[in-house]
Image (cartoon, rainbow, N blue to C red; front, side, top):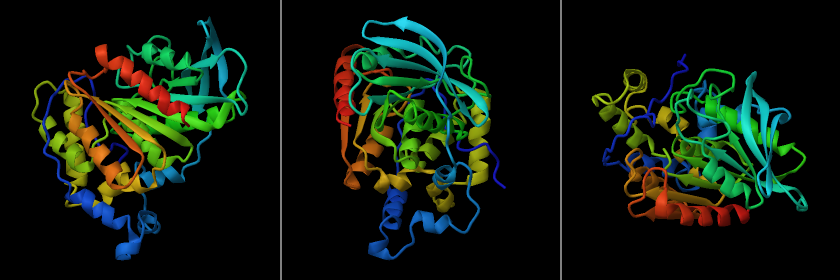
Length: 347
């Protein structure tokens, strides 16, 4: 039985610049498997139908049931100009989770307000704040007539449960998908206009959610941890020897390498957990944003995803910001906001 510790990659407390020469051979193999008409290979779903699923695999996460229950008011934080701010709660795997929520003022559009689920990047869970973390992005979208929901993930601020790296557990993805279900039944929401935004670690969470849920109608990935298995494996191999990396990350990386082996030696397992295997099924428009001076997440990760989506004929836009940092601050912020707002208004 596989352990619950899966896929240690890295946490964004570590500022490491690593150039990774990624192999596209495995991706080529995945493309062939996704095209049964060309080679008569069974689909991924058919291949795993009769064997035990890795609980972190896309198929296992697709087969779960998600229900966050009702979004429940915890605190009203008042009028913010043209939207009202609330702290809400919902349930995820028996844990009470918190989310910041904006509701626009004025006449509600027919069908309800469009929604942006804003998946934040790594912040030390004891430092993260429901009400203050990622507020510049949150407020910018809230002012544009969206209901914005920023999930805390378990173990962050007051959310129940234990925090864990999004790359060693499916827990945060499950929390986000339960929030999607809770949002769909909230009275002011248009359930057919739910977009998802992810920065850094949140980009990786968003990409996995895109492979699992058909409710996501548009996605924006900013400096996302969105690499293919080949690049992740290469990164983890280098990660173990870097003195700046905390010991628990190194231990998780080593355990992953020991249990799963290299992608070329255990391709079925790596394919089952990779969103890249399911790119042919991602039919929402996607934007990818990355800065050339990002010290935390290699721009190669975004380049890989852009190429994979384009090769699959998907609707993707890729924006590179010369000198842009990991947070896409400074001169990059305005075009990032205008482009992502346009994306979500087109849902």
